[in-house]
Image (tube, rainbow, N blue to C red; front, side, top):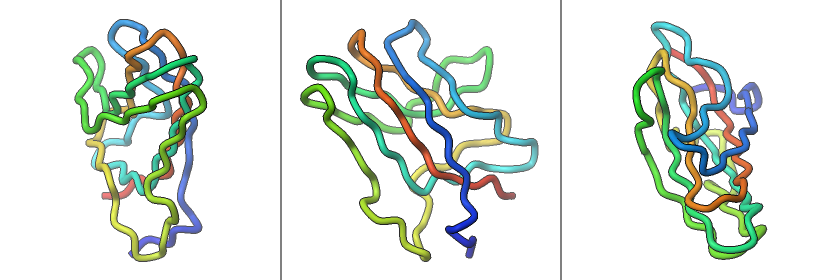
Length: 118
């Protein structure tokens, strides 16, 4: 069981750029990225849907989840509290990067908490 106090985090700014936005580092070879927490904040003045997943260049993004934001500054926080025995909510394969695409022209700030492990 990993020590949750030693996890990494990365903040990405996702918008509706064609093809989506990759953020963070590439998952090292022979490893997976175990994401234990995601927190998003809609900066668009209205509804905005985040398609969250991973991408391996030059392929298209792989969607793992759709996160809805109803109004500006709406936030999504999953899980509310990260416990020591928590399981990952997403797993990204080696060679990929976190990726997102917003449905509206405004930004969605996306924070993930993760570890890379075999």
